[in-house]
Image 1 (cartoon, rainbow over the protein chains, first blue to last red):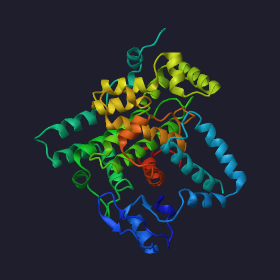
Image 2 (image 1 turned 120 degrees about the horizontal axis):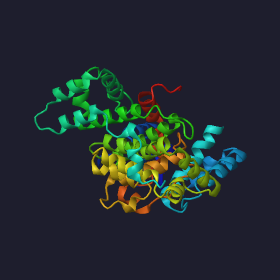
Image 3 (image 1 turned 135 degrees about the vertical axis):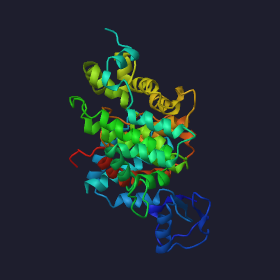
Length: 110
Length: 285
């Protein structure tokens, strides 16, 4: 049951569990099939992530990264590995920050 | 001559005291007999400050649906304590705007500081803290010790920067090695001298070493993580070239899931530009 950030949600995905807002309010019940309007609503509420059925963790991201230009991706990764040299990339927080910055910088450069 | 933190702060006269308006305001806020109306009156006496506070209240920081056009309305909506902290934030940036741009440009320094303040505020919001401006202040001032060092011992700071660069090390470690203390120590001491709340002074003093904060303040953990994120995004710079080391205990103390990072970065992008326009009105962009 991978947790997907709201930006990566797509219509047609199936919620594994309830999508619950910080305040405790349930926005959508588990088992629902996502539609555009749900995703829009999640964003409006500032929901951060949701659990989705039948998806392998990382699949969505790697699909997104595959569409990118490999030479730009490599340049960005080099730049980041120098910048992150003092950090422990196996820590989940650092790993997530690194992953986000790869996406962000590649987008800036394309 | 061997420098100590106390000597250094004494040798930097421009920073020996806090802006009067803050002392005045915080006395009023802490007194049980002042009303919102009194606070609004004190703020309105400083027209520049009043204008800046109104801009903040109308910015993406708050996103109120309708325009706030009077200070008394801002006091009611934003809160007295919060407004007092914001008043301090705007005066601090003004007070330190005249330093030399030799090693680190003031603009770049404040951009980094503002981004860190905004990030700290976003993290505090995710934690549902009641006064998020207190975290904004701590983030905004986290590197203020660097300004003291840059204005009084620039040659030592340059040596530390060269040392950090040639060894690929973190700046605060090079400062400790060459000078005996680092910018976080100086910032913490300065804030204590200014008699700012201990959670703010500690957040600044221990932003590189949160495990040394005996008070275990949330502020320290928030600023530690916010500084790391800001360094990673490379918005502005206070001289550090690398992402600092994450203190796992501080991260755990926040109690936030890693999934908040994505929304934190996008909120930062949204709020940062507004914040720069308010706090650095003279910057070119």
